Amino acid sequence: MQNIFDVLKERGYIEQATHPEELRELLGKESTTFYIGFDATADSLTLGHFLQIMVMMHMQRAGHRPIVLLGGGTTMVGDPSGRSDMRQMLTKEIITKNAERFKDQISKFLDFEDGKAIIENNADWLLELNYVDFLREVGRHFSVNRMLTAECYKSRLEDGLTFFEFNYMLMQAYDFLELYRRHNCKMQLGGNDQWSNILAGYELVRRVDGDSVYAMTFKLLTTSEGKKMGKTQAGTIWLDANKTSPYEFYQYLRNVDDKDVEKTLALLTFLPMEEVRRLGALEGAQINKAKEVLAYEVTKIVHGEEEAKKAQEAAKSLFGGGVVSESMPTTEMDKARFDEGIDILTLLIETGLIASKSEGRRLVQQGGISVEDHKIEDLNHILTTNDFQEGKIIVKKGKKVYHQVKLV
Image (cartoon, rainbow, N blue to C red; front, side):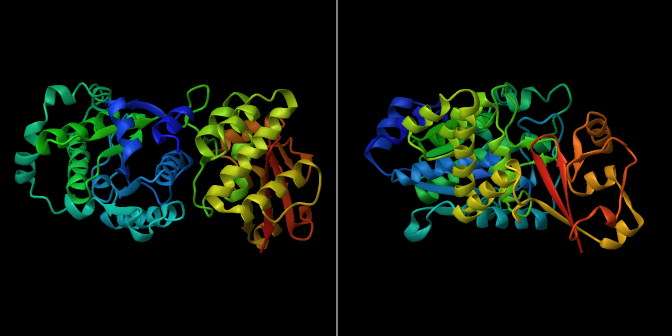
């Protein structure tokens, strides 16, 4: 079997690693326990998180043991990485609820039978810590001068970094020490924006317990222009089907830029690299075939084969001028509201097609909004029950985004 380090490298995951030759040798000779942490800042994981889940699945398939670390404790503080201001403080109840949702979602992707994978929550140890004891055991190993050179802190110094957030790195580092002691965990993995935090844990375990452990980060899921994938004008692409429908999920991937197809196929599917390269090399109209494969394969992993097929059929029927599928994103609205009439901008806001009325005004003025194939040109256009056929209308945004409104 090919060494998993080589697999991850070939597919484009690995960004940085400590002692890469040693790490490759370890992964090639024994089953290794590793972990990835997920702070519970929302009630669903996102497409960006899915890249990390793919790494865990690759590692588990190669015989290694993943620990999913839910950040019930670290979320109480909040990671300052990539932030220009302090994160909103969430209540303990919300964090606990979010962590449970993460647990349910991740359980679909990993095999937890017979200890093949583990779920832990750092609230179990961080919330019980005595602060003075923690400083004596952990804090003494950290240089403030060095911490301030870390990108997650350095970028915040001008705008203000609270002491509250300054503790985050120590807490995440302690997680590695705790998991090493509990489960002989030898590796922490994460996105490249976590490199400073992950290195802190790697160094803490080596200093305190004197064993060889490793750190590895992988590329963030970004477009060729360097923007984070999974962010749209309408909002985030979630793994929860109630927040982002399988159809919307499929359509997002179906519409990735031509330049991002090969990279995204390598990172978010299990297709062999020979097939990834073949699809990525297609040009002109043929690249759309590759995008359909990408959208179908990723939707199948996240939402199951049945939902992937429904989304694929819905997309084909819409763009082929066929019958509208029930898989299309749908908003149910009270019929009585349309008896009086609703203006187009309000409808676009309530269906989630636009984030603001200013965005809606711009789209209407540019000819980017249609209702039942009739282009809307009046910003004050009113929709009534007379516009509905069999209690439904289709609203189209741009060339590729469709949304069904159903009267109830």
